[in-house]
Image 1 (cartoon, rainbow, N blue to C red):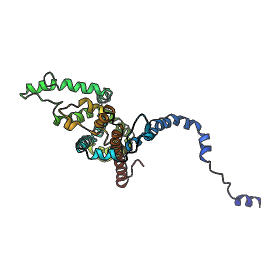
Image 2 (cartoon, rainbow, N blue to C red; image 1 turned 30 degrees about the vertical axis):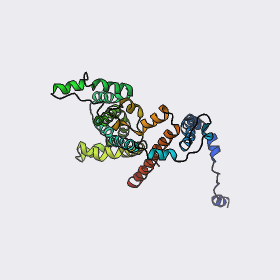
Image 3 (cartoon, rainbow, N blue to C red; image 1 turned 90 degrees about the vertical axis):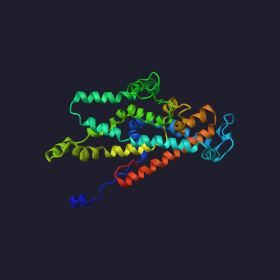
Amino acid sequence: MAITELRSAPPVRTRPANGWSLALRHWQLYLFMLPALAYFLIFHYVPMYGTLIAFKNFNAAVGIWGSPWAGFEHFERFFSSYYFWRLLRNTLLLNLYLLVLFPLPILLALSVNELANGSFKKWVQTLTYAPHFISVVVVVGMMVTFLDPISGLVNHLVLEFGGQPIEFLTAPGWFRHLFVWSNIWQSVGWASIIYLAALAGVNMELHDVAKVDGATRLQRIRHINIPAILPTVIVLLILEMGKFMTIGFEKVLLMQNELNSTTSDVIQTFVYDSGLLQGQYSYAAAIGLFDSVINIVLVVTMNQLARKTSEHSLW
């Protein structure tokens, strides 16, 4: 009888721990998270309060709340300005150029992963990583030195082959090529690291089985390596779209001059010129907010497309 009662007794239900009790139980983990949370809160979320000046005629003497309300006046001024379409076109073309070359780090990682010679593999990795650690100012200085129409090495080679010196840094048609390819040279090796890390996690038994089945190296890359890194590619592509409208203005500003301004004027340099040099803080904030809104829309759209076409997305 006692055994029967014991078997029929309902199981003891424990109350699920609430959030505060879990936080107290694992307080060490939350302590480790605190610096990162404080960083994002202080430097990313609190400054969002300053976007109010995009809708006001900001006056530093009276502060943000004391400044008169302007509504969408600054946005309308920017959209109706004669340089709006030139800035938008230059920004889009430059970013599309960079986006088309997005697969280059993937190709580099796949190529380096196939190298059998360990010492040569390390040499290639070091050679491609090194430009990442060179300052942008130094890179532009190297370009000025090598591409000088009189004393530059490149133009000396052009003259040796019977050509005429080319004004690389002042010709509008050369700006995008120089900007993008110098950026690729500087960042392609560093960007390939994350793909190499993903390839390191590929099960080598899959390659062994494929070899037994007679698969060639290209077939193994196509059917094993590429599917293995596809989730990483999708996530990085979505993140890349999040900064599609944002180009680091430092390099553009260093390469920019009055002769190539028709192709080198982008939104970021215009924000710098309007906000910091001319003191039009509300106007510059409105342009920057317009730029950020487009980036957010692109991220959400790209993430939705990734969810519908594949099993991988940011959220």
